[in-house]
Length: 205
Image (cartoon, rainbow, N blue to C red; front, side, top):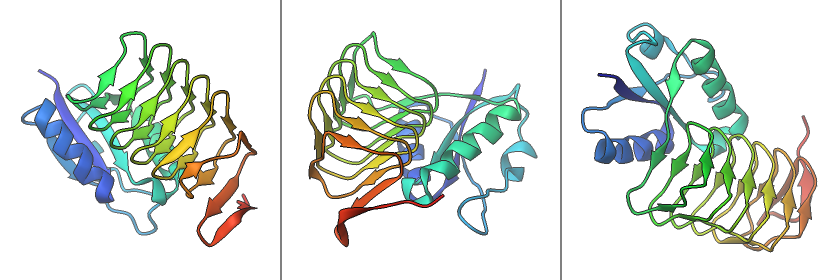
């Protein structure tokens, strides 16, 4: 029988492991050490468990910058490990929805027909995705985000709690919209908005 492992760091590790314990009794929690919150030592996983023995869920906070989560998932998969999704039993996910792997779907979420949720994406509590929403790789949606139909969110982007995106809105890659409320219809790649920078800034590479 395949053992399920939750590996990562920070609050996300605790939340993911709590849900995994509900769904998969007997799963294992592995905290991965890091000196910089971007590069993680995989020895506690790779030095103990072979890819044939386990499936892995990688859990990292979005504030570690979504790139770090994407990098760690890629490293784990390149090492030969399969990943799995964690979906709260109180969430509704239509049968047509495509969860692309290592996706977290929190309590009270509602994902409508035709949605695609990219690998490594994290949907916090009570997130709503209307029909045909597309999320790229490692997107983070905080509590109460509502995306109307045909919204597209680029890889590595984060939307703060209480954000609403109107139908057809588009968010570029590696954006952070942390103001909540209704967001603009488009955000170019690497846009950044928060309470200290409500007029926005550009994230440098």
